[in-house]
Image (cartoon, rainbow, N blue to C red; front, side, top):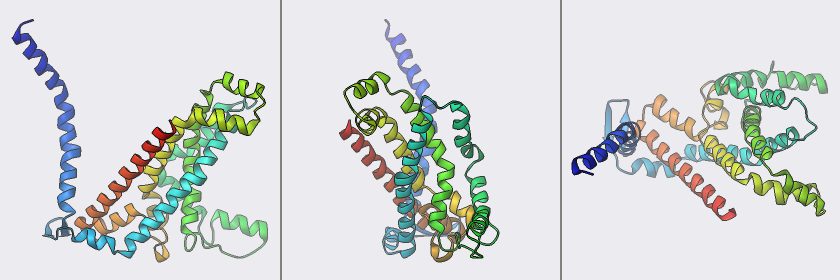
Length: 293
C-alpha cells in the first residue's frame, strides 16, 4: 500500500469526523467557555458588565433565596424517587400480569399525558387546583359538604407540584418498567416458585436484579429531570414562585436573575452550580450501579 493511499485514508477519517467536531465545539465547548467567563462578571442587561471574579459564587453561598430554591428542588427530587417511581413500577407490574387484556390500550392511556407536554399539563393543573372553582376543591365540597377553599396554590404548592408531576410522569416511567418486566426470564421465576419462594421473595431475588439496569436508568433520568424543574411551577404560578417562594426552584431562580433582573453573570453562576449537582448525581448513580453489578 503506497504512502499516498495511506495518507488519503487518514485524511478521509479526519474529514468524516470534522462535522461532529465542529458542531461539538460551536454548540457545546464555546457556550461552556462563555458561560464560565460570564459567571465571573456582574451584568446589567446584555451589554454592560463588570468583572467581579468569584464574587457571584460567594454571594450564592450566602443567598437565602438560592438555598430555598435548592431545598424545594431537592424535596421535589426526593418525591420523584420515593413516590413516583414506586407507583410506576407497581403499575407496570399490574399491567404485566398475564391475565390483563388490552395491555396496549392501558399503556396508551397512562402514557397519554406525556403527549400533551408539560406546559399544557401545567395550565390544566393550575385550573384543577384553583382555590375557589378548581375541580379538586369542588370534589372536596361535594364529598364533605364544606365550603372550605383549600389553598393548594397558595400554601401547599410543593404537594401540588408533586401531584401534578405524578400524572405527567408515572405513565412515562411505567413504560420503561413494563418493558423491563416483560424481558424477565419466566424460567427463573418458575424455578424460584418451585423452590418455595413466595411472591415477595421472587420479586426481591429474581425480578429486582433482572430489571436493575433499567431501574438505574429511570432513576438517573428522573433525578436529572427533577433538578431542572422549571415549566411546571412557572406556568402554574403565573411566572412567579408563589407566596413565600414555596414554588421556587433552581432553574426558576436562574430565570428570574438572568431574564427578569438582567444579571446574566449571577444566573450563569447558578447554572454552573446546577451543572455540578447534575454531574454529582450522575456520578453517584453510576457508582451505585457498578457496586450493585
